[in-house]
Image 1 (cartoon, rainbow, N blue to C red):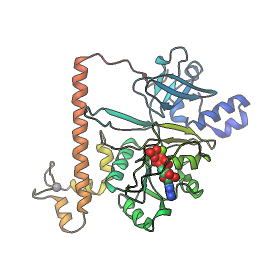
Image 2 (cartoon, helix red, strand yellow; image 1 turned 90 degrees about the vertical axis):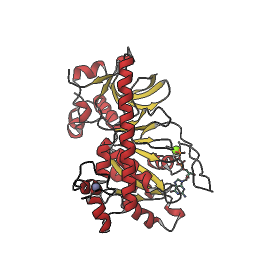
Image 3 (cartoon, helix red, strand yellow; image 1 turned 60 degrees about the vertical axis):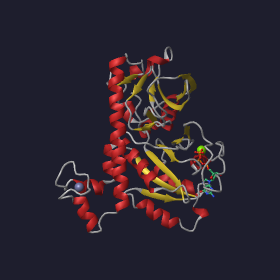
Image 4 (cartoon, protein in one colour; image 1 turned 135 degrees about the horizontal axis):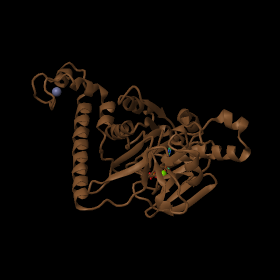
Length: 358
Ligand SMILES: Nc1nc2c(ncn2[C@@H]2O[C@H](COP(=O)(O)OP(=O)(O)OP(=O)(O)O)[C@@H](O)[C@H]2O)c(=O)[nH]1
Ligand SMILES: [Mg+2]
Ligand SMILES: [Zn+2]
């Protein structure tokens, strides 16, 4: 089994093997994935990570391997496959450590997988017109639901005198979430993000267009290979410069996902993430007299009592109720559609999910 054990490896492993372990670790391989495999499986189907997803193809990277293969259904950037070089469709998807998804834009409310196996989501916004507490809360709920650590990154502090006011607002979402303020172009940015960027970690930059996600990726990579573009001066909106998701494997051994600015993040399947993001309101709700209390005019409503005492921030309550309603509706719609589709058609062949040791 290709387990990660740096000390034993560096003392006992032959050079070739050590290099292989080092390469895998830089791609984000860890015991979590190794424990799903055996030496026999690994020798026939080596682990590869999906580092780019295109319409009909995937880019995969592994030990001494960096290639393009035909697309597979049901996978996303960051996924690990046990790669079958003879028939890539037979590759097996390793169980994910985390998965971030949203409701895709458009009327059919499909689920869109954004990224798998992230450790940290840097939720990026700028200290300007892009800043929106409601949007930050959406991202935080998505990250919590996925089991990914959310970190709020406020960029463009060099263009405002109000950085600390923006930071204070962002911190109001939860005292547990780290809020980092920086100039994405400055060398200091690397140090400020370094607590989350150790070797073997996978981090992603998420946020609207123009907030500095690619600039930060370039800063971490130590070069300027990814294109960036000025935002519109009139309203601070970006120009959707990055168009695809790409996992960059840095020489330091951290995997960094740069993503295109998302115009809309509709929540789906994030009830647990919302409970965690709005833990205070969720706890209060437990004390309402009725289980289905709408926190409106019902007698014995603990939330209304807290509003009366000044303990609850009313706009925050309104945002929470809106997100819970949206999540419930999208999740129900998708579940109903999946049920209808299952009744109508045979499922499309998708990559095999690898769930047990062989
Ligand atoms: N002054 C200043 N400019 C910044 C900062 N961060 C980003 N920029 C600039 O903002 C513009 C947009 O940055 P990008 O990195 O392209 O933004 P993005 O989030 O990748 O945008 P999309 O790829 O469109 O999603 C570029 O001109 C950057 O140089 C910052 O902290 N301070
Ligand atoms: Mg970009
Ligand atoms: Zn209530």
